[in-house]
Image (tube, rainbow, N blue to C red; front, top):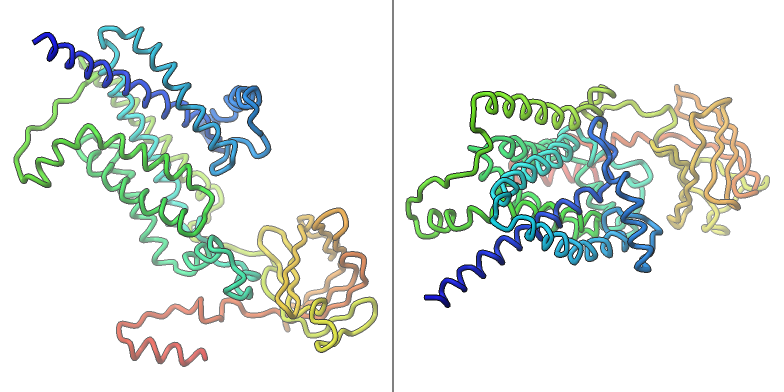
Amino acid sequence: MDKLANAGKLRKTLKLLGFWVVFWFVFLFIISLQFDYAVLPNIGKITAPVFRGIGEWLGYSSEYGLVSDSREMYQHTLLLIPLSVLIAMFSFWLDQGGVYHERMKYWFHVGGAYFLALQLFKYGFDKLFKHQFYLPEPNTLFTPLGYLSKDILYWSTMGASYSYNVFMGLLEIIPAIMLLFRPTRLVGTLSTVAVMLNVLMVNIGFDISVKLYSAFLLFLGMLLVVPSIKRLYHVLILNQAVQLQSTFSIIKTRNQAFLVSVSKSLVVGLILYESLFMFFRTNNFNDDLAERSLLHGAYDVQIFKRNGDTLSLHVDQENLLKRIFFHRSGYFITQTMNDQMQDYQLTLPLVSWQLIGRKNEVLSVVLDYQYAVKDSLLKLNGTIAGDSISIVAKKVNSRGLPLFQEQFNWTVQGHIEAMNHYK
């Protein structure tokens, strides 16, 4: 009997200690992250000097800082494991009788659900309003498929479909709503785990640099499911009825109930405000329709002179330009006949009909430009990387490309006819 009692006591101790380790790991990881919120505080910016100091003391690099998938963030995450164990042991020592365990478990569950809801709302609305997967930029449209990296290819493909973005956005927004309410929280958490598993595999499969953060969100969702695993097994696998699990409640009096309701309303309001603020501020609820700059787009080069000489296709493929592009983020991009790209960061806003940009200290661009809206002709005269340049180019109707045609075919015949139309 003593052995059984000791074994039970040991299991209880390990369970309590395990909870505190997980609690502190999740807490420390979240406060390590830097987010440029509109209203909520950027806690990661406050804690960054502390964590950076610890990392440098241990000999870790601090080149990129604590951003997802940086070496520093991986090192930091590994460092959090022993740090969480140490703090957990201290917390366990303070909480000898497990007095605070149930209360902290409650706040961990609620706080974790609300944090996941915030992330799902932000990413969900970003998709719903076409801000995350935006329309492919002109230079991407005219880059040969094999020259695109996997992440750009995925981003561009997803950005080409408005309806699928809306669908994906709703797949994240609906679980976020369910996470906010206790009766639907378990279903919302299970849905979140499914969504985040897909997101993580996309990030891995297409080498998108949010692998560590998406893995953390998946991990957090799974942690919130753990208390209900046994009930789910009995219901879904054994097909047995189970009693509703009694949960810890911080509400003891009517005044506390009122205070909790007000607090919850404020937190939910802040989450929604944080998720939607940018879209209302910019009045942009469909980025496909957002206004682009006058010069934004792709241009076929009709006349190209370098240092006064008109270059020949058969003589100089490496230097002869076939297209130029203006990116919405303020980049001037050139494309040679052999599909080599060169980009220059422009000084914005454009003034005095002159483009001024720089790739590095050596490669710079200073061009006077004239653009005729009527015939979509652009004339550029000036210097690129020290060479005198003269260009006449005609704007391409990028939205007229097959990729942007709104078509839907239920039958194979209809699909083939549509493909043949654009051959």
